[in-house]
Length: 358
Image (cartoon, rainbow, N blue to C red; front, side, top):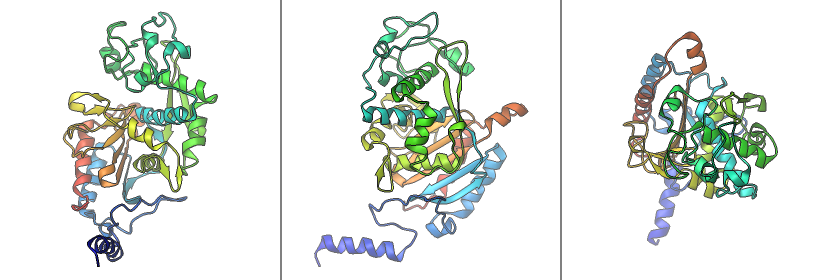
């Protein structure tokens, strides 16, 4: 038997003899109406004791739900994964996906400027220079538009540069004006609400179990003409979105989001130092940096929101991790949010339970 044939046969035998190990190149399974769940973490090579220790820590920091998806099935979950909670800035990665769909449809160009799209704001309105910002600049948080925005955190307000400080494309600033204006652009290009578009093109095709159009809301404030499109979503639905991206936009035999868009949008287009990189509304590992000191092989990326609403995707390991916390409830009760340092420690505990060979 020739060497190449022997290698192929060996890979097939390995997959048959070791049910927890898939042959190289095998595709992840996709959930149907419900997620496929491993009989136990140990049955698929994970360390159950380490996962239980990580989940005990999660309880101590105020986590609400966690899901660990490996090779397309649930290895472990904790908390109420069906509870719909505010995703906060995870919404921005949903917007990135919708822009990709509209670009593929020919309804939107990344090089279209605010001027050509008719995008302005209340007084003091945008300058001619600011109106040269493109859709691509908004996706990269490099618009150079420092107008007041709806739904800003105190940190955003305090760090926002003065108007006219930077030209479009020159400077990275995590800017809700960019993200909110994208919401306006998406809805104009689609001819419907962002939530209807998301439901039709993403939520329904991948079988989200809990999401409904009514779970979206546009938060408007007097500071700007552009509102913030916010979502409430369950952990198990966020996990489906993560698996969709892990599979490069494919769901079963259907390409939901163009593979080229998934690849382009999750590249580190901007080096943001200790935080790693930033893509098109995705946080991207760069030089191993991602979530502080947690392990991050090349190609890792994540969606993140206030109070550590996190979706972390590890293509190198065929792994998706979802973390949710009830930040709205904590705010009402006067309790602190889950901090990024807490989540980084939790993530380290989860990754420590991962099979050493994969």
